[in-house]
Image: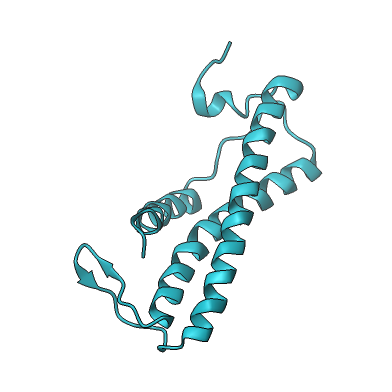
Length: 131
């Protein structure tokens, strides 16, 4: 498994735990219910993809008969040595990777849209005041 995939997995787990225990502050002015639903769906889709991609990476590497190691320690095999399955898992991994890329771009564009056009505090809650 690639180092970026392992790093993402190691970072997203505590981030997700933090998010589950600490809901974000309210946006001022409050968004419409539809916009709120889209925001929540988008955030959870990002979390799901950030979890699924490293797990699929481990799965397709193991299905291709290769070992996955973390800090020099081999992870237990949870996939059979099945190269055709490994190929399918890799294709799914790549598709979901593209979805994560486009969803991240959309997420960033939505943050700028909130800041520039809706004039709410979505972006400044993360960055502090922006001129």
